[in-house]
Image 1 (cartoon, rainbow, N blue to C red):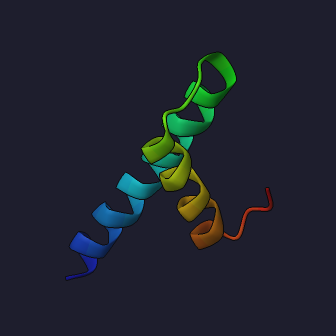
Image 2 (image 1 turned 45 degrees about the vertical axis):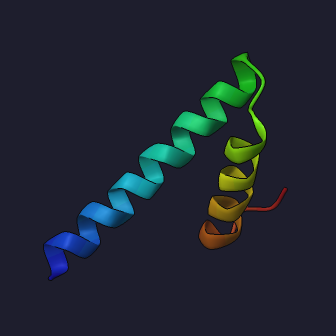
Image 3 (image 1 turned 30 degrees about the vertical axis):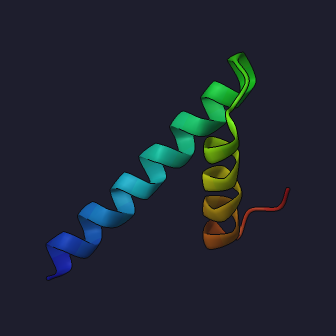
Length: 47
């Protein structure tokens, strides 16, 4: 069970980093913007 939780958190962090990087180089589509905002809230990051 701990391994699954760890894998899920690692996936979320990788997705967050990918979206931040994409935001710097390209435009995000609406779904990606919503996902990034949700991840930022989940991780406690400010806008």
